[in-house]
Length: 111
Image 1 (cartoon, rainbow, N blue to C red):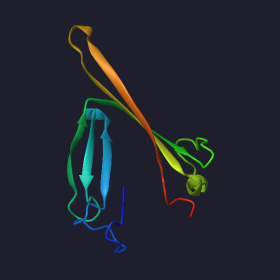
Image 2: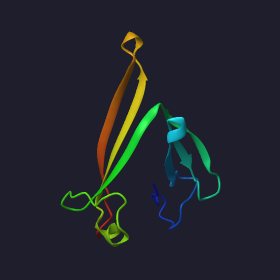
Image 3: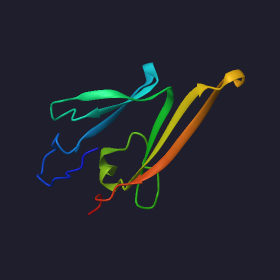
Image 4: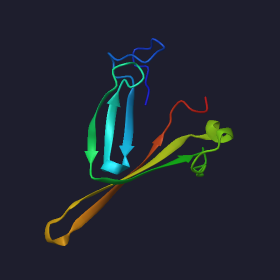
């Protein structure tokens, strides 16, 4: 994610303008990295016991553009659906899984 919060035209590591999230399926974890392309590349565990992460890319009408999205359809993306599943021990009942899903509207696309 990039946000030019200080309006200087480039990612700046002083204002938390660049944040990257990476899913590491082999370790069942999600990492958060700050300023990965600016130079610092400071990554830390964000969520453990992640069993699935999925993304869906939607146009203005809410139609799924597929996975992967064809390059010709990049300009049609208006929102992104994210689904994250975490599994934890639940005592005698074994494991319990919880899934969080949300849709993010990309404000400046299509301008």
